[in-house]
Image (spheres, rainbow, N blue to C red):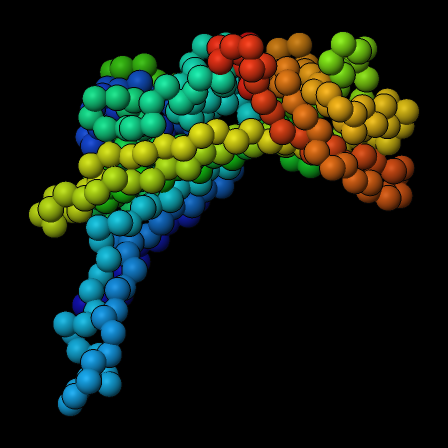
Length: 338
């Protein structure tokens, strides 16, 4: 067989997230979908599996491995997809909806989430991720991963990098085998790349504050920040080999919300860090440009450090986001995109 001239490049691939109607069934071609403004991405190779090896046995031929001693482990595999993308309102909103289910603005992760830990045919519906022109096949140029669950979302910004554009990074997993087939979308609600002409930018931020509980706001000079939302997703069981050992469902874990800020080291940052060492160290953190905003109403500052930079010392302030225990309807973090 002759060598193939088929190849793929990242710049020619369109990455599309589609809303599924049924667990285990790929999103329809007229499903609600968004073309993600990705800058880079990755996904697991098809037919992803590990090998299970039986132990050596006594007797003739037992010190080597026969074909009956090695099997592909297909019943527990999980494919992983990562997307790095520019921070448009539409893209950030879509990932918030996928990760914790709030599609409205502000996208609030509240104390009672997740509402269920069992994801199957009768509960929360995951998404299909399409990579148009991402397949290695000569006949079918697309590859898609169905029933994907988002496990982490990071929003970050650096005033000295990426033109100041606020970036997003999301990781997904699925226990279903990928599908190599061309895509012909039609109808439905579609958010194209050209509809996402505005991206949030660090240069537009107007206020970054840490406000101690019962105190006044400390006004900070922000160089960079990062907000991370993570949860565990584990597959449950497996179907028959004829059905590709598909999972029977997923179990999701709790949300951990952490972050950090790098700010100019001054009296304001010192006051915030000093307050964090008191008996009641809860504070409110806000990063805002008036439209885009991250609010953590009950954050707790972790161990801070110093960057001894040539352009002035900077304080690195890590934090963990919590909710007010008075009610589980209170927010852990609010992400505003409008």
